[in-house]
Length: 117
DNA sequence: GGTGTGACCAGCT
DNA sequence: AAGCTGGCCACAC
Image 1 (cartoon, chains in turn green, red, brown):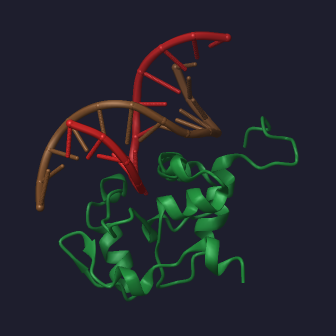
Image 2 (cartoon, chains in turn purple, brown, cyan; image 1 turned 30 degrees about the vertical axis):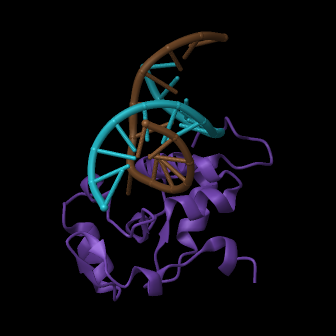
Image 3 (cartoon, protein in one colour; image 1 turned 60 degrees about the horizontal axis):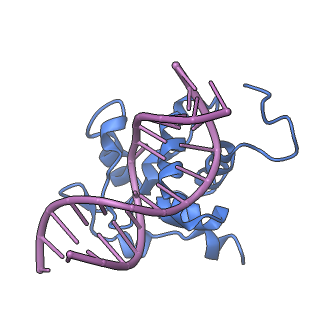
């Protein structure tokens, strides 16, 4: 762990990890939703990039529960196996068809809403 | 310390 | 209607 962010604020990556870890089992969210929750709507790419660095995190990050706004498993190629992400989601109750979550709207978990209750 | 990059999103053509 | 472009901002070299 670098101490570059030894200040009170955690790095952007850490914030993303915290939010992703709060995603309930069987639920999914989007990069944009996380970015919006963190304050920057347009920084959805940062969230995806944070996921790329999630391997650096000591604690496991359920990155498979984060998809794009269309419910498509855009980041599946970054997992160990191309089908690992899909298998994990299916094991949690998600219905995936052609790399897309069919019941995405039901499983969608918006941190800006859920965490503000 | 400038430049490039990235698992996205929304708007324009 | 579908494809392309820009924007956005934190991090690594």
